[in-house]
Length: 326
Image 1 (cartoon, one colour):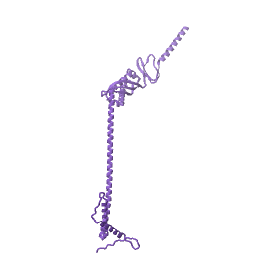
Image 2 (tube, one colour):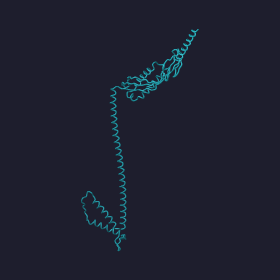
Image 3 (cartoon, helix red, strand yellow):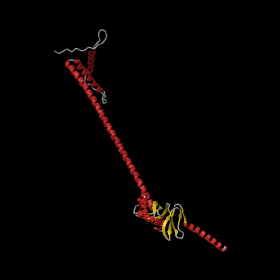
Image 4 (cartoon, rainbow, N blue to C red):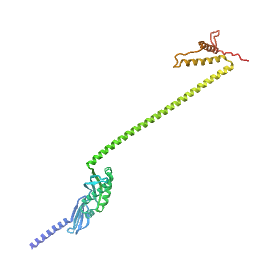
């Protein structure tokens, strides 16, 4: 009896231990950032999210542990021939994230290797359709084109390609030297063009300055001519008025006014002759007493105009009496 009890107790202990082991086999802890695929008799049934998961022991098993975080994949260096037959070495980097654990585990074998080969082939295709200058200057366009092509091709694998970057494009050494010489020649050409543009601009500015100066000078001459004409017009008006007054005096019989007018013109003519710059000696084929007589006539006219001395010693003007002709 004691032996039976001992055997029963041992059996119960074994069953408890076996139950604990079975329960432990059915409990699966999935870390954050991962998903586990569950297979039942070798067939995919579901995916376990991060945390505590339960499976049926001996029936279900963990198929693949899929990393759901964004991952970085280096694209190794490869030689590519561009459209203008330039051999260059290109490498890059790719960022992707698994969105569907089942597709990434069962739709493709060796996911990273598949993505790497797909990126290399599309990189050769894209770069081979461009010239070297375009490839060096339009890297953003190449990255966007590669991203669209690779993302569409990898969609059945349950991943999302978030970014593709070309790290280095290395031309051959002789091509680099040729590019350096070309860049130097281009810079020298730009310098010559800029210098010619500067000379042309300075000539234009100088011509514009001369044009404005000529315009201002012409306007000054026009203004001066206008002023001179106005002065001559006023002088002519004054001369005409003086002539008119003298004509009226002659008509009235005032002989002294005639003498005054003639003496004035005579004196002005002598002044002009004496002030001439090229005249050293002036020959006067006339009696010098004529000029003195003319001056005497001017004095007589002044006496008649302003009057002589009266008995009180004060001078007063008086009008000359001209006898009227009957």
